[in-house]
Length: 120
Image 1 (tube, rainbow, N blue to C red):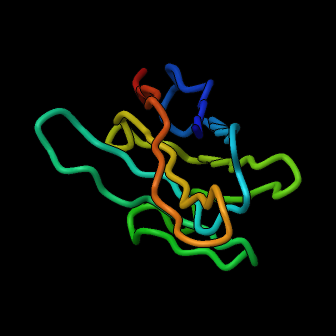
Image 2 (spheres, one colour):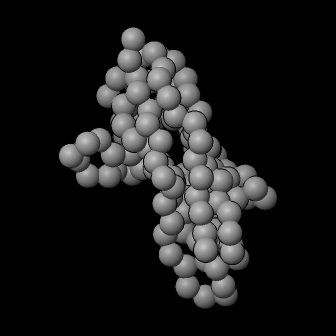
């Protein structure tokens, strides 16, 4: 069994920073792509950013230049540094990881979600 735990989140003022983290644990053989998604109530979950195990990153246009994803492969952890936050960044943020528990296969796992609220 694999679990993704993401503490953090909270209330931040517009223009402020916030850092999220997500640690994977359990029967992990290897982890491929890790990423962050966000979802507002009544809307589809959307990709914010992703990172391969080699460090190649991808960002949604709405967060380019403001958000930075990174990972620590030794700790099976992915981070999201969010700067210059805007009210429209308010959402529930979910981490995602493609995890292999054996030599073959692999499937996506999700964190429990953490609320980020940007408001004065």
